[in-house]
Length: 118
Image (tube, rainbow, N blue to C red; front, side, top):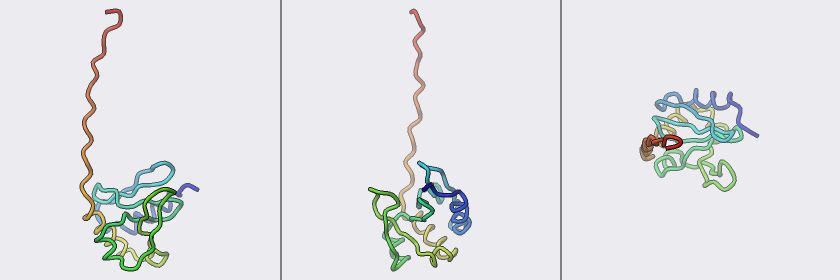
């Protein structure tokens, strides 16, 4: 079942203090970005935070589960943790800081078109 946009909007509102947060649709689900780094996913209306050593240290005891079949496990905040905006914002900010900067995409080369019949 795809994630409802209202679920993503609610999560973004909760983590607003983490930094510059946004979400992008991805295959019927959503990737969540903080300061330009993908740090979480919302799949089947469930939040998954990318695991980092720093994030695990901050979160303490937290469930882990894959966001979709075949994926690596991610941090899965409990219902109580999902109500704590300050805690969630801090976890997302810590995670974003720990992740490497996104690689710049190479500019597309303009292809030279050959004239027809020449």
